[in-house]
Amino acid sequence: MRGYFKAVYSTDSIKKIESELANNGVQSFLLMMRAAHAACELLLSRSANDIIVFCGKGNNGGDGYGLAALLFMANCKVKVLQVEIPFTNEAKLARTLCTDLGIKIEEWDAKPKKGIWYVDALLGSGISRPPEGKYKTAINFLNSEKSKGKNVLSLDIPSGLNGTTGQGYGVAVQASETITFLAMKQGLLTGAAVDCVGQLTFTDLGVAAYSKTADAQILEKNDCDFGILKPSAHKGDRGNVIVFGGMEGMEGAGMLAGLASLKAGAGKVFWITNTQSLQRPPELITVKPEKNIVLNLIRNCRVCVLGPGLGAGFDSLIKTVWNSNIPIVLDADGIRWLARELPRKREGKLVVTPHPGEATDLVKGKELDRFKTILLLREHFGGDWILKGAGTLISESKTLWINKLNMPQLGTAGSGDVLAGFVAGVWSRGSKTPARTGVWLHSCFAKDAFEKKTSPFLTASDLLN
Image 1: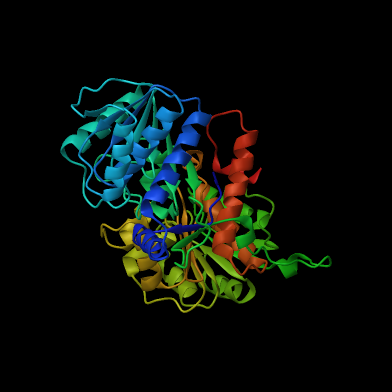
Image 2 (image 1 turned 60 degrees about the horizontal axis):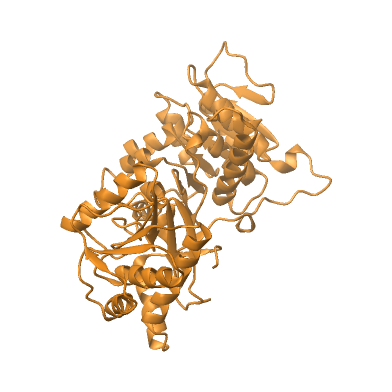
């Protein structure tokens, strides 16, 4: 069983892969039984027993019937609950294998016998509407058992989830584990889906390559460019960063972004702020938010972080920066300005870092999934984009990347300011991939900080210590 994957696909792309395999003579029942075998190996590795398999009518149910047959032959105690009669030839064949072995198949009646392990083989990745009737009651039962400490393994995808978008359709299985087959579904890795998937295992069913181009890539260190520093490099070689934000009462945002820029490689950071009384970190150079000062900095700095803790009343200066040629990392109040003003597409270089709420404001409340949202934003405003949240999406150089790190501990005030600073810092020192490199650094700093902490949560400043 293989656990590593790099490329990820939409459900439409996976259908094309399956069609390609069929055209090349690969039998779909063979793939079904390979999936069943991989799931059987996983359950045996968990010493699972007293297993109840919930089977739907499609090929996902067929995976379940095949799994039940293999578990039975491995001398496991296994029962099968049929929610609906199979309609595909492959699923019918797998069901017949169960009955030929003498496995009793019972009808789902909302009052099933209970087990220790449950297998969700109800609905596959191709559903497009909320589960209804018996499927809905079966999903609710599985979730009830999960809440009581029972184990639930979903085959291919937790039933009720969309494999392309990661969105649920009202009710979805909250699995303990998910084993997904053939090609990684992009929807399993981002947004609300991460609450349903549990521990994720991938197996390619022995199919090593496909002609279909991936819809997205998993972010890894070797996808990042950190810039090159010669041994003789000094702070001037590493470039200067402007942080325009952290105004009075919100100084922490500016400080975090500025210090993160230095941590990520900037040579100097100029902090544009109107604060007077607060003691600033000694590494940051404070300047006033005046137009002549801002224009001079634009000429002498490589990157501007625009927006963290900026507040209201600075629209004229924001436009000055926006209309300049300096590369911008747009965050927080800078994004709110973007949603209000809707300026023309920026010609200069740009990285924008919205969280889901800010992204919704930018698309004017359109009900779009995370993948459609980030692509629409790039098309409308230009630049590269980082859509924050579980399974952060990065659209950079017209390629889509997914960050697999899911740390709810990062959901804390100031974490986004640190990310904006990391992006600016690596960009200042010459990175050609500042968006994904900044995200990767943010993840590394977060994991390191969490390993060192004794408390259950992080503060943004922990990422910089």
